[in-house]
Length: 291
Image 1 (cartoon, rainbow, N blue to C red):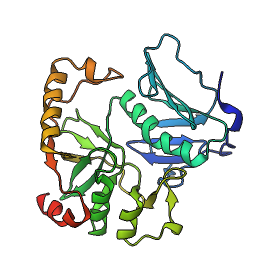
Image 2: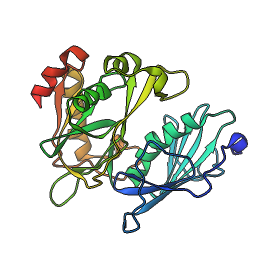
Image 3: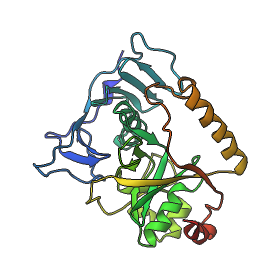
Image 4: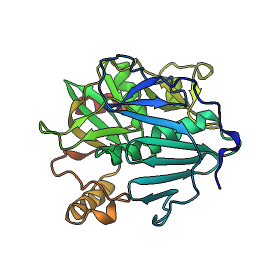
């Protein structure tokens, strides 16, 4: 049984959008992303379209946190939103649940589903954002509410380029060293953080229905080339950082248990896990000096 009762009307002639080293041809309007209209652009195209999606994948394993994998396919089920079938790094099929808003559908297309697709394409997606300092990319990861986007907004306000928000995609095995790809040109800020940076909520689009979190648009990415990746900062306590370091060492010995989709071994030369605990607004200048 599929969930297509309230499927929004698709875009008549899907445009091309630029994101993470490829182009998105989407039946869902993605107006917050820069267009990729140059006919000379030879980057691969990923299709995002509406269609029926099964409740489970035949021959798939156990569903964990709404995610099931089978061969080259992955099925993501989001309560009250819809199902997303991500196929072989080439397409995302969206099957909305009745009553799901296009805003909520788009949130998971550009978040979890796109991250899965990047993984299938041999890239390394992180729940993080990244800024560019001195020609190098610095990423910030952490739990929801840790201050990732607030930190990126601070650097944007100070004149630095924000490379991506929410999903940071790396090519860890580039011959010249790991690189980070330009992503979505917007930030997700909680209400208090958006007000602190001078944004009026009436002028902003909510991230998800009923949540006090808003999209703050950034300038469209004009340069689609990847940026050398320098370091990943984890916004967390020292104790948590030590635990994750142990898990990473174990995963290099046996990556399977730590990788749900089981395709990419952890990179061997990725500089990560510097610890920053000062992600509150009053501590942002200290964080800037750390970089």
